[in-house]
Image 1 (cartoon, rainbow, N blue to C red):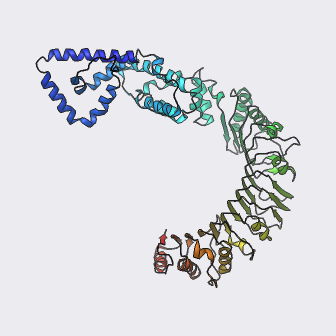
Image 2: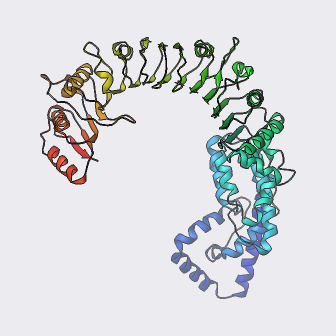
Image 3: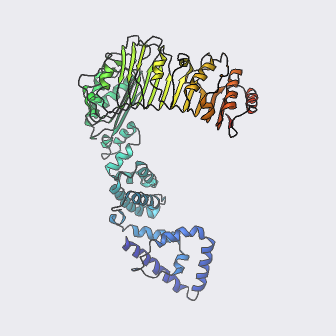
Length: 586
């Protein structure tokens, strides 16, 4: 690169000397004119001059460059001469060797911005640009495998290619880089590139993320085409590791044995994530899950949704599985789920949604996973369940939505590590449930279940409480119970869960004593869908009047604009115990 710089400066210096000879006696005037021009366009020329200086030879090897050259520089001529010199540059002059992460990122950013890929000139520059482009493509090939160079950075560079050279340049990129680019588009689009040329014919077969979607319930020809394609090509896939394999099949025309074969093939490529949605319009008790899936050592994420029979074999070993999501599947028997869970030693995230309108008894649902961090359990309205048992001592997040109308038992061991809980339930024995989550820090709960509680429970660590007010109830009792049990509460909110609607309140009687948290710790209060009914207004006024440390009170009104204005004016005039409290309206 130093040699190229010397040649460039030498050529420009000779041109300058000829200019000085032609204008003999006028050098002083030229210099003054150059200074005037520089002063006038200082900001515009500063970056040009600084960039040019970096091309000059180093002090110990270089020659003296007249000041008039720098001040009277002809930018188009400079660009032309630089382009000519770049044609003789070798790849070794451009490569970056032995750099750390920060320096690498900085240098790549420089090449991205200054390499000339954003040039849009044509004509006699076409051949030169293509030659320079090939050098830069070789440079990209050299850095393509670096872990610190993201796909986004590659795409940004490629987008700067001039229109007339796009395919020429892209086709000359290495296979590794082309596969990275194909990873950013849907699998169907990536496959379509196979018709471009022989070079592209099998590139898509190196993709590590595969997604095949068929959402047309009625299109039998489309199903057959996709089935034929997967039967023919998936066994030939070349990537040694498949990071993600997703199937979304919404038709009964797909044969279960074919689906099982596709999954088995993906598993044989050290599969890390499997995601299947099988919405069969004519459900059958067919097993689409191959036996080798349950002994896949590389599997980290497993998601199964829809008409899938979960029949877990006796030999199960999923040592890497961390996330398991099972929604609306059919279980072979009531032991199936626990047999699967007991063989996932590092499972952290579990989602189980039982099937709605399934009148076959599911028996007892058992979740016993010592290392589980997050659990979401959904029991729909029409689900015949004997009961459920939960043993998760290290759980941090717990979501329970139990809408079942059938009576069932609930056995839950204490969760001492619990941070957040979401309870949308109305169980006969709410005390057992609440007793297991008393260490929670953030709690969202429906008022329908609170009425089943009574006194005796304490939330010593609860800081954020969100209550759904959706039923006709004795509001003063509910609020008093919750506030007295939460002595360290900092945030209190009244809202409505999804599909829950306001039904009004029976009455509100102020508690005989102000709860400790209202006096000592409550800092934030909010109310969604505030209607301004007398009972609601009295609760808000009570909080404002007694919360000594309240910082914000946010009211989201519900009704006409005129009615809103009247409600808000009324609250604005209410007394506040905290001088720093801000009353916010939304």
